Length: 432
Image 1 (spheres, one colour):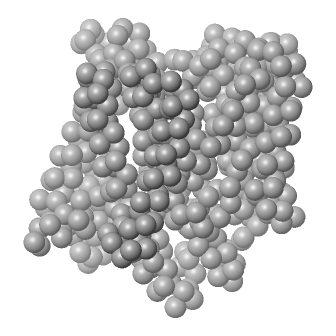
Image 2 (image 1 turned 120 degrees about the vertical axis):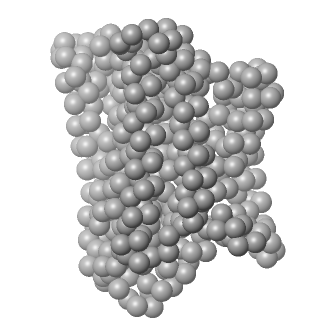
Image 3 (image 1 turned 45 degrees about the horizontal axis):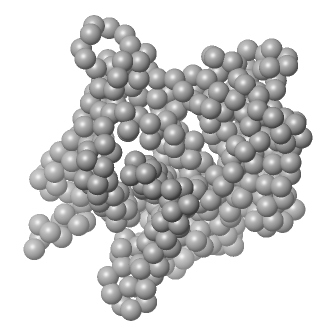
């Protein structure tokens, strides 16, 4: 029995932020296994996995920004329109003014920053609810996309397409695999081992409880197995394909934002504002600055997602970005974020996005029509949350409630002490 308790407590890293992904990780595994059997093994082929990352990386990038917006207690309905608006601005600039494509990317990020500053100003400093500001932005920038592009498609140059349709190049000896992808997989394995070792060392130095060695070995075995399998799948695609460049961009963003939300004062302030804005402000958190940042950051990531989509599509069009905000919001909530704000993780949002992506991909592989795909996705989203809420109300086992209970205890202790959210790293929520 004690080993089972150790497993439940420590398998996902010994922290609530990792443990909260327990339910969704098993849901993701179940979906993969179901469609692997249903599609006669097509789901986990190299070509299909590469296609999934290439097709859905922009939604996962949106989910990163949307997670921070929702954690802060807001919602952003304009991300699809901002992505489309940025795409047409960049495409037009490269076509009509012949600016180099690297400068086009910089221009797109600047456009996103300006739009984010505009929306962040209304939310943070004027006090207009983000729902209204971004609803207005959805209409404004959708109209701007059609006005600038005259409702036409605008092609983009070959170099620009690399960020959306490019892959790691083939270098080195012929090993039968993409060598750069293999090197990335090796680096990921070493990083996981180093992090596990470092975590154990840090906890010993702090005189904190250290997970049993067999737990660490089991956790490393699972994680290394997943990394090695994924590396061989992505490295073993047909010649000319490997890990997509958009997937590398996604990985960098996940690592960077996970570090920011987990290990920095600014990241913890976002969670403090979403948990209790008034208490956070009294504790010294710059409320307006936090709200401005999350809105601006979301628009920048939306612009990046829009450029990646345009690059993959080879052209910007008037239908780009439609319903992207709904996919991003669904990924965040499926990944365990709280509707009221204050809870959620970057990794959870990625898992939630992968659940939706692989569900969508599996249904398409089976030839299910787009109408039924939308119906099934909607029902999965509704039932996944409704079942858990019902179990909680009936006093039964609830995945979300059981995994969030440590957060509730931490929040109660913090409010009782009336301490700053960032003053004590041992009591502040661990996120990311």
